[in-house]
Image (cartoon, rainbow, N blue to C red; front, top):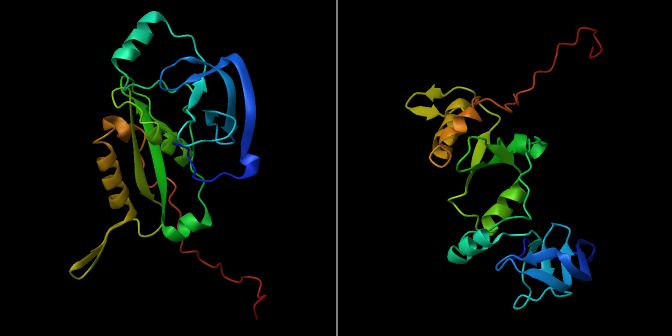
Length: 208
């Protein structure tokens, strides 16, 4: 399945041709020779233009030894995502994020290693759409609060939950999927911005 339903003409390169050594079929890992097309998003499919019934996803060609091939034949549910690079991402806070009071954050970790990478939304969706094997990787998305009351505020019998409490809850929920994510999210006030701006006093008397 492609990332988007519709692509602009300038997002597609059609009727390309490979003589081999460039691409292989994502489902069988067989080297591909022939006509193909690719998208600005990095997706590559067989045929000169996309056909939902016939086009097949291609991934960069890689020599696979016999043992690995036999294992993949026995475990066809495992996908080798050669076309995906786990690139670290640091969120950029926009005015819309400030108005919303939160950002969405995405994290991935290889199951047998301790490192955790924060990635962008596009890469997260790519991992989800490719059905990445849960025995190899685990990933999670969270809502991260960046503006509002820092601490919980109590108004009579009503409590307004503060940013620290909200983000600690998000960390706790995420740790059910990535247990050591607390090492990555150790500061519940990360990206916090005080949205109540204070206008400085007019010490020069310009307003009089």
